[in-house]
Length: 491
Image (tube, helix red, strand yellow):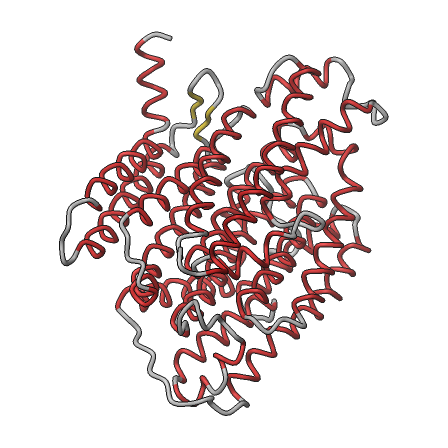
């Protein structure tokens, strides 16, 4: 590789390099005792995220591949990187108050968060299975440690141990799928795999056991990351045990990165394999929606309820995968954008209501919130309405365009099932609303909303509101980033 190619590769991966350098500097800063060390780390982390976002934006006008075609900079990867920057920045802003209350203010928290961001960025730009795997493992290893960050908490330790064990299994399955595809095609680069599969007519032979196993193993490894049924066992325990800001980060950033990989592999490069996985994914999507919606109805812990809510939303996103085509891809991208705003918003409210990890996060924390803190209750109401898919919030249009994509592709029955299950899912959000506005407060409480938390609430509220007011603009943005035509009904 000559100097020109090396320089091109370094520039293409400039945002990742910025975050890696930032993580290393943050690690050094965390070793220097200072009364305002945490504020400095928060500010520094945000600055590095902004610098990386600025460079990603500047690179967007020059689509290019790097590292011998294993890494790509294009509109698609830039969109997802912006989502990752948003989710990570909101997590950083949410974390200061939470860590102080839990008494675990440590600089390595922000270091691990930045390394997790880098892993996710590598995933969304990877066009080689090995590159994707490196990003996936860097992200996962960082989140394993962050999940168990509350070392004195039994729930946190248990969640981290479960996540490590189950994560190792999913990584092994993903690697096995990679090895089978390498055996079939002799390469791990997605574009070359597509050419070879098409040339040899392997993708047309739906009864080839090697091809079926390779596809399913690769898919299972990724479905574990998004918490789809029946690979969802880890989600409730990990969501409950992890620090609340990290739970929010996993629910949006980790999910967005995994879906970016799923889209790039199964809706773009290896779309020829659709006959192999389509029926399986459709069944998994319905199961995921059903179990996520019904099991959430009986939860008494807000984080476990949001965990099953996350599972149900993963099912809706998988329906976009089933719809396929440019419309399905655009609807998934819009959904993930809206989900980032509304889910981080409700997790910010949970952080503000936190009374300590030893107490937990019972639903009764919301009791009488409208009487004691009317503004916070209104924001929570708005985020819950959006999660339930009630107009005119962004959540309604996110679900609506997935349904439009399904109908356009001829999957009318799946669209009807999704509507029915969405109605079921709305009930567990309404439970919280009733507690806020009908139930009496459990006792006097004071909620201090710091400046950083006000920023989080404002950004998430405005994002959820604007995606509800201007859904067509945001959908056109997502569609323009992958060459899709506008969905029917946009006008």
